[in-house]
Length: 305
Ligand code: NAD
Image (cartoon, rainbow, N blue to C red; front, side, top):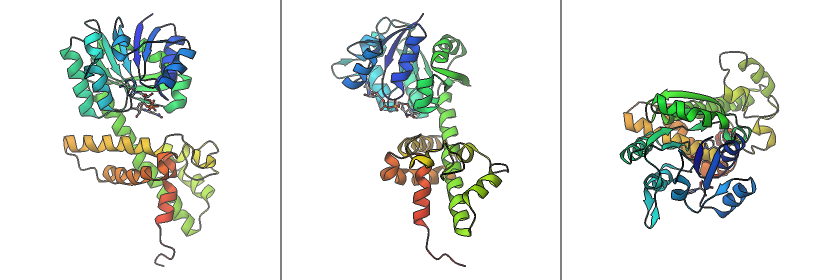
């Protein structure tokens, strides 16, 4: 049994903390939002009064927070609020599962090490359903012995743990994966709109493309039109799933990484811009596959025959 300080009990962190508790670990949790604290308490989790209190006496401190600046604020403390790093016993393992920028993961790692602790970046894929079912995939950056130490905990919340390399490389794997997903989603959506205008049925295009070289998750699992894949959000008026706003966030982090290392990634940048616009409208709350409606609406009526 491990004593885990868990900070951030939202859509993802709430069920992750519950799964840790169900696996027999002692969880001492904190969230700024009273509703999140109440839900955790109702699930039998010990809720404490601050992030620093959650870190006190913990062997591992896990964060699942909205953004990089939240992680840094929790680690350092703000104003009169003490930080988790100063409250933790020397050698505590800090694991951040939030999706944050690669540069922010390096900063969090440096802060943790300077305070005498260990650090892993361990972002996830699998969404809220994966968090609830305990089937998340963890992409982990850090030292191998720390990964070994964290693995039993990560396996209580997920079904796959991939050690991607040194510090920051978990977040690197996450942004690269999601950049592929954002770009392929747009490509699939554009092809369906083109097929519609050329007179091709959705089912016919799906049957051809899903058995040919265009086969990909954005087509076969998250098909952007209703019909061919009954479980895809398109059949539920694009109820998420994975909201357009989260894809816009992740592509923003991909763009920061592109700028950091100076890569020519035109498709990634264009996908970032298209999802930024989508997230300002209905994509704030609709599944990211709903971007097909924006693409359809932007077309001309006549075209050039
Ligand atoms: P969320 O907004 O539902 O939860 C975040 C929680 O953190 C909130 O309850 C908030 O009150 C709390 N919080 C914020 N600042 C805090 C602080 N200083 N101290 C304590 N608590 C604080 O977000 P989420 O959907 O659970 O996502 C969490 C992270 O996981 C994000 O980085 C997100 O990008 C990533 N992620 C989300 C999904 C998804 O499908 N929701 C999938 C993969 C990764």
